[in-house]
Image (cartoon, rainbow, N blue to C red; front, side, top):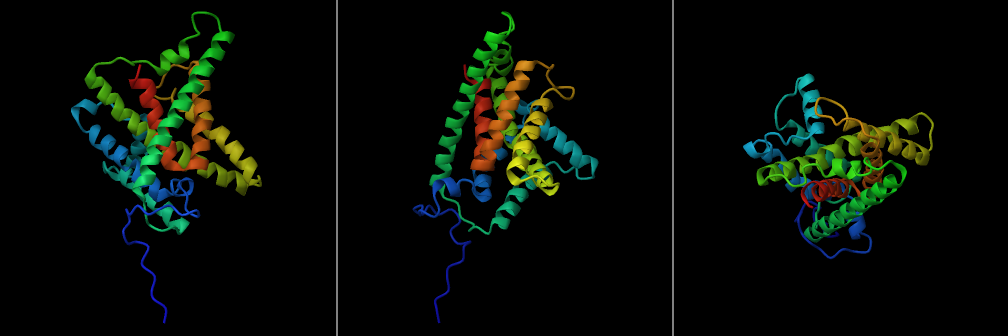
Length: 265
């Protein structure tokens, strides 16, 4: 009689050597790894918005999702973060992968997210330079001015902005990539598109909606072409990250980019 194999739930946070079949690039894409990676960001955001310093830091998508939940009769405050956790846990369950997370993978994910955030910042600089060559003087700095608005606030405002940026990284990726992009890919494939074409159209449409969402509602920005175009490009960038690198890297990069632009000179 063969010896029983150990349960996959044992030692969920062990840090084994990564085997060739389970490389960093594969493990970091897994929903469970993404959940553990974003958990500190989610906790800081959800606690931070309850404090006086974060009273005005609630992310717009967070407000939309909570309003929707309240409209259908689920107004409990912590329901949205609980649903976020449950979605990622349910997604991981469908993958049939072991319930293990490596701490060393989480550290590498933080570094990768920072590098990708810097790359997105570089894309912003390139686009701004291109737009300066196309637009008249006087409007050339519009994009950077909008993206860096409030770059030198008081310390209390900086902390409030930090809380808001963490929420944007999580909930905007939850809505526009995990939910909307995934749903569009499934829908377009169901109506007859190939997987490749369905994905291309879904990326374009979800990115357009992502860009447009920043100009909607009482707190939305006035429409300007430069910020809209950049956010469309950023939406495509985040879609590619979500598809290729998973939810955790997309959310971490999004939060990291907002912090780089909004808090650093």
